[in-house]
Every structure is written in structure tokens, then in C-alpha cells.
Image (cartoon, rainbow, N blue to C red; front, side, top):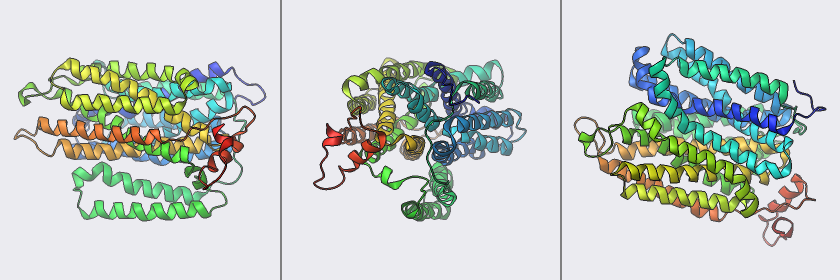
Length: 488
């Protein structure tokens, strides 16, 4: 393991972190376009094969904040090695899986890799020069969004040239390399959170997330008014309330509710939910729109591979925006970057609602939304990191990433219901379904912009420690409190 006494050059650390984030982000989306191929190869049905997505979603949602919290306590570098090993082991099991059941289990193991993002943000904050933190976090956050789009691009050609097994062999090779590089080059965490890990809170968090995400992901198959869906949603609400109560009363909370109540944190997290609805739903349904046969009166009859390539400019725009976000945030502030990003998203989706008959119109919108996602995701990550003490960076970033994922699950379920509300005799959705769906996403994006405007600006003075900044921002909550420390 790299030792704290000998700090690796932060640029080498950053390369290792980028490889780790890219490995996880690619696994998020590469499986989506090839579900029919896997279904045929493993002789299963459509309902069962969708559990490859659900299992990964639920697992990542559960493990992301928990691993972030453990990393804050025992060391972010150590936990990053653990998450890389879990990704590698899960990929190995998936590549060799003889049945759909084993493959679903492998996806659960891969979900442990969700801890990569909060650990990465925490390591960046610990190791990088202060003036480089915003840019590095922006790039890492953009890589997550880029991977979601790039996975759609590479999946088709990879399966056509080799087989679907290589969707897991290649990430396994990369993550093994990332795990070794992390152990060798990434320094041990100099910042640790005292106290024990609250096991009861972790179990309650896991329980309500599972009870929420299972019915949301499978509601269209089970029936939204079925007893199972209603029972799980009710259980999620009850367990969430119990979890919050437990955290508030705990001397060693898994997630500090005082931190979650900070205006900059909860408002940024609300934007994260809304942006998650837009981004993940967009990635899920735009390829379907592009692949719709011309006989439907809309769509472009693109193949799986073609639709992936058509989304490549969007991924490139997201990455470039992420690279630029650091300098933009340093000059204009992360809040303004967030407002611009969410505004671009609303404009792009609004245009797509009324103009999607020509391919150039769709591609133009993907470029705009790509820039929007890159700017907004980078800004959200920076706002959360700036608002909390360094000892809580992992768990705060983990909850932010988790909340985006929950938003994506809710948005995907809502958009699926809207798009499929009317179908033709050949089970192809009507154009009005997509039009209404794009309009729904535009309204959500506009709402995200409104919330972003009200995210408070926290200006740090060089002499202020992270704890002093946190207390200064918390003063905003108290009526009549002096806020000069936070406002400058």
C-alpha cells in the first residue's frame, strides 16, 4: 500500500482515479443494449433478463453511501482497492456465468463498485492542491456521465466482434489493473472520521432503498397497483422514517442528518434527483427512439450499434464540459455553473419535444444536453464537497450520487409509463408517447433550474477550516443569525 509519509504526485493519483471511475461507469450502461442477446444466449425471458439492470441498480444504491462512510473512517484508499476488487470479481463471475441466476448475482457484486465515486471525491479533496480540487472533481463527475453514454457506443461493436462475455472480461482486466495501481500509487487517507460504523443504520438504509427501488424498477412488470408494489412502497416509507429517526438519535450516525440539512447540501441533492430523472431516462429511451422503424411514422431505424455511435457526440460534449467546469467554477462559482447546466438541459429537452423529425435536430439536442450534464454533474459534486467537512466527504458524495440514481430510477419508471401509454398493434409506441415523454423531462429540467437558483453560495476564506465553514453555513438556518462568515 502507498504510505501516508510518502505522498504520490497528485497527477499520478488522478490518472488512477479516472481509470477506476471509468470502469464503474462503463459497467452501468454496457449491458443495456445487449439484453436481447443475453436473453437468447441464456435461454431466459424478457422479464427475468431485466433483473440484470435492477440488481445492479439496487446494489449500487445500497453500497455507494455505506462504502463512502466506511472510507471516511478506515481509509479511502483501502476501500477503493476493495471496490475495485469487487468489480473485478463480479466481472469474472459474470463472464463465466452459466445461467441467468448466476449472472444476476454477479451484477449484485459489481454494484459494490458504486463506492468508487465518493471515495474518488474524498481522495481528490485530501490529496490535491486546493486550486485543483474543483477541476479534478468536475472531470471525475463528468467521466461518470460519459461512461453512461460511451457504454451504449461500445456495447454493440464489442458483442458483434467477440461475444457478450467480453462486456465483462474487459472491465475485469481494467479493474484489476486499477486495483493494483491504487494499492501502489494512491496514498493512505490523512483524514479519518472517528467513531464506529452504525450497523443498524446501515441495515435500515439498505432496507428502505431496496423496498423503494425494487417496485420502482419492476412496477411496469408487476403492475403499479399490485399488492407487492404497494406493500414495498409502504415499507420503504416506514423504514425511511425509522432510519432518519435512528440517525438523528445516534452518537455515531452513518449519515449525519445535520449535514444533510445544510441548505447547500439538501438543495443540491434536490437538483441531483431532478437531474438524475433527466439524464438516466434520456440515456434509456433515446436509443429506443432512434431504433424505431420508419414504418411507425417517426424514428430513424437505427441499429443498436448505429444508435450508440449517434450518441457519441453527446458523451464527448459531456467530457469536455466536465474538463472546463473547474475553471468555470473558479471564475464564476459552482452555483452559476449548475444553473447554466440545468438551463441548457431544459432548453435542449424543450426543443426535442417540438422538433425531432430530422436526425440533425436530435443530434443537436444531444450535444446541448451533453454539455448540460457535464456542467451540472461537476457543479453538483463540487457544491456538496465544498459544503461539508473533509471527514464527511465520502458519505456526503455517496448520498449525492445515490440520490441521482434514485432520481434516475423514478424517472425511468415514469417515462416508461408515459411512452408506452399508447402503442400500435405491433407493440411500437406512438410518437405522441415520446413527445409527451420529452416534454415531461423538459418540465423536470426546468424545475431543476429553479431549485439551482436557490442553492446558497458558500465562499471559503483561506483561514477557515472545513468545520468552520460548515458551522458558518449552518448559521444560515437559524433565523436572524449572522451569516457574514459564510457570505464574506
